[in-house]
Length: 338
Image (cartoon, rainbow, N blue to C red; front, side, top):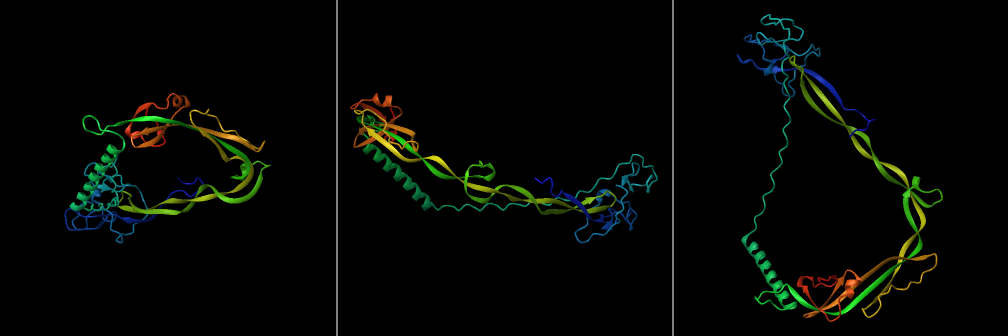
């Protein structure tokens, strides 16, 4: 996007040159589009549809005067200059005669992306080794599951559940203690209150703006329709991002910060209470509170702890109860799967 106050796109004519055409009736080649209305070799009229742009470096300069595009005689289909009232070839009036079609400059070919590199084929020994390792891993995991978490089912397969005995209840309650402390915060200086204590000022980027940074130009050929063409330079302005600097202030202010955490823990036989707090009046306060409820489960060969979502659900399970739990859920700290 260009800056409204920046440079605008521009198009400049760098020169006017004659188109070329080849006679279809004799060997005459590279005839001039405006100069040779008829073939100097055989007299055949020029066909505007056969005009073409000369190759780079072989242009012939033409007069810049321009009367308009040639028109095609409706009687004999010969092209005649725009100022003519009658066809120069057959004399027919040119009232309502249409302009000749312009020749379009060829488009630059699109770059062809290189083909992607061929994938290296893995050798058979590598694939066999990977397959063997995967098979060995699966067998090892299955053996550990069958030995560590219980008995097999009646059909001989590994059971997906295991019986767990509730052996204990545990709870934890925590309270953060916050203190009123001095702290440094940053803000744009024009947004700081007049009474604020400013300890430092720096220049920092606060957004950016577009600034002119030259042009990107391309040349193109434009058929004028009268046997000549313009070599036109089209230029688009380029812009770059330039940071907009502003003053950034470091402000000293008071704010609450967690300085310690008080914790209380116990079992179901003790009342689940919050820890008692001793805070400095006016300088400290109680902050966020957290609590957790856990059951200790005995499963074949080991103990695990799982958590309950609420105190009510935690107390609804009694010590000594046997629960069926999913084998995959026997991980410390995970929610209880019952």
